[in-house]
Length: 91
Image (cartoon, rainbow, N blue to C red; front, top):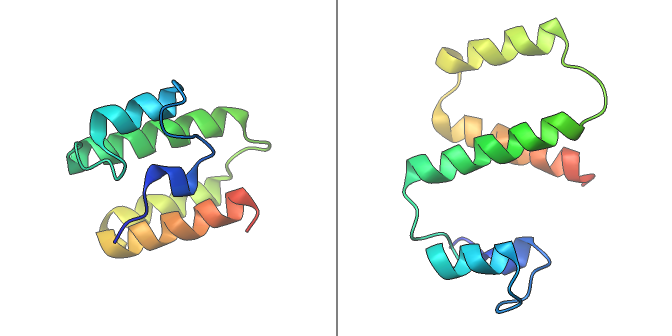
């Protein structure tokens, strides 16, 4: 089972933060969102992080990721995303 938003973030339920409002609107496991909304949120958050990231994206990385459209199934794309998130977090 997925862990609630509070497991992954520093917010406290009821603290009036944006994260608390998100939990109130969509549930602690984002069960009120459909798959497209969840993926869109991931995309938007990643785009925001990219703006603050150091360095630039090489042509090689861009080309390889283009090949994942047809060369990697969705389950493995999610696994790659989890692996990359852990690296970005410093884990």
